[in-house]
Structures are given as structure tokens and as C-alpha cells.
Length: 171
Image 1 (tube, rainbow, N blue to C red):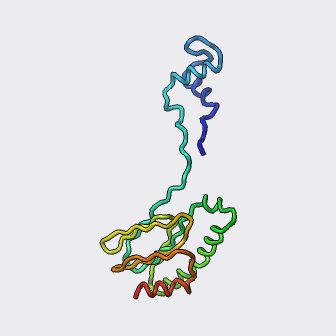
Image 2 (cartoon, one colour):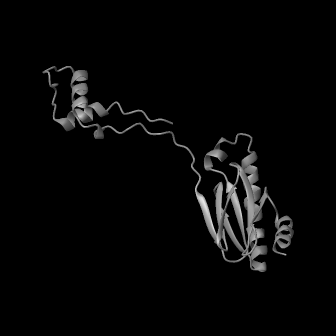
Image 3 (cartoon, rainbow, N blue to C red):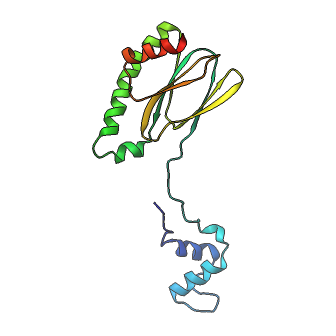
């Protein structure tokens, strides 16, 4: 969405410049007064056109000190608002529903849990960094532990589906 300058702006410029009803050429035509005053006043008074508003994902960074599962939802509110057939809304509802039972299972195993709403996740494991990109509109999980390469799982998992994957990763 691009915002257009306000029509009231020339009147504000006239008032600020002190051109009370006359242009510099002596004209009293209101359109000419506003134009002349606007042309003679510094450009800083008129705001530049606004750029289009776009979703720019943040980067989630995490230093791995013990085993961790990071849930990732690479969605913006605008994605959910534009989801006319409700597929994304159903996915995120299921994802959120299962996170509580997953978090409970992880705490019993002594595994940390983090949540990220982004498409880019950076992990520092031992002395190296890895960067993981999740497709916009997707959900998934990252497993990480000291001394191991991170592992990514895409989609929605219940605790019953995720925990065997985690145990295999930690072996």
C-alpha cells in the first residue's frame, strides 16, 4: 500500500511559510499561493512517499548448550489473514495444540524447548554456526545438541510422533 500525500499539506505549508494569502508574485489565487509556498519551502516538510509494507522475517538465533527442540512457524499474520480456505489456520491450530504435550514430554527428558516465528533460524553448536531456512507458510521443528549436527523435521507432529524422532537423534 502506498500512501499519497495529504491534500491538506499545501495549506499547512502556506501557514508555515507565512504566505498569508499572496504568492511571491502577488497573486491571490489559492492554488497559486499553495504551489508557490510549497515550492519555496524546504522539502523536509513534505514526507516522502511511504514504501510498500512487506513482511520481513526476523532471524532467530540460539546457542546450543544442551539438547533443544525449536518449534518453527514461518508464518506472518498477513499469511493467516489471506488464507481464504483456512488451510494455514488449521495447520497452526494443530501445531499450537500439540506444542503443550510436546513441551511436557521434553521437560521430562531434560530437553530444552524454544519457539520461533520466523523463516530463518541460526544455531550455534559448539564453535560453528548453521543457518536453517523454513519455507514461508510452513511449520516444523529443529533438533540440536552439543556435538551433533542439527536435524530439521517439517510439518505438524504430536508428542507421540516427535519423541521417537528425538530419541533416535540423541542416540
